[in-house]
Image (tube, rainbow, N blue to C red):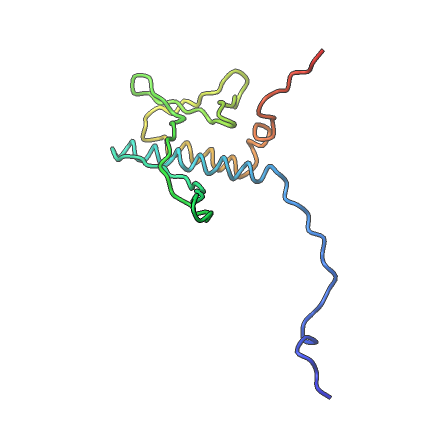
Length: 145
């Protein structure tokens, strides 16, 4: 009697896979933007030009083929200075978040500390400390009365 190759496999019923919570995607998106801000800050410190790119899908009108093109994009810094003293604002949905009530800015001090401060915010995001800001709706809907 010959045994089939398939009989060597462990066959089970399909397991139920729980969907990932939506906050994980939002965390990753914020971390991606923070990494970009960190890279921009490093370029500023080292007097190098910062370039950012995004992928855009382009459809060829003749063939209908869709290709992905890498295009330059503009990224605005989340940090700013006043008399060479730097401040940073973390933005979610393009609006600065208040890490403490009425206080959206982080006092960085010297521009050389920017990458270090941004790295701290990335770690806080990874550990879920900014989830309450990520889960807020982008725009409060006005109710009709």
